[in-house]
Length: 315
Image (cartoon, rainbow, N blue to C red):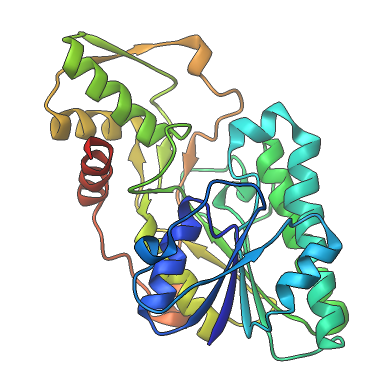
């Protein structure tokens, strides 16, 4: 299958391109012009990857990327950081919501309203917002509590409106937190690992952290991209699917596990500057719908996920 991956030069995008190539797909990597170059022969060894310049908010650029003729698009290009979206909420809406609208509009024009191409729009488990102490299901209301999550709800709305109006085949994926080799330390888990490694090197007894009480459903990025790959063939247009382990772990426990892997007994020290206002206390997903539709199940444990992250940082 010919698959275009938008945001291919990002953390998840690189893992997805590699997996698609391994599966025998013909892949185009949609990358923002001017970004750091990627050696795709290393990132995705095997069949060559076609690099397509893509500015998701620019109509001509989006139409040019679709001109490659993909049978499917995995839409990852986004402001993916909650912190970055808080700094510029309007910018997050432009990229995440309006950018998605730009993509589905261009796909609709290309397909004359009802073609065979499929658009997998990657949203976020954060769209559910703060709820009770039970795993989120796809029928739960979308009640975002951050600019990032709100912009993802906007992206979903734009994509599903196009599906209802034109028949464009749109599937929504709602991934819950995931990490792995290559993730930026701007995210909590790799940030913990970096600080713990620094504490071990310096002999520091404490490490600054934000709030360690929230409970999160943590996956390895490889499990997440496998879910995306399966949804390209088995996802039902107009439907949303949670990508989640279905088990919660407290952030403080993740910190403790990382300390054990790294070999330091440094204790967490609360730092008000690292506390995220409006943080969701409990965010765990129910992926029954995805599992039944595709046969997917996470293959990598939380402990192995953390160990691979630490090993990658050490390299």
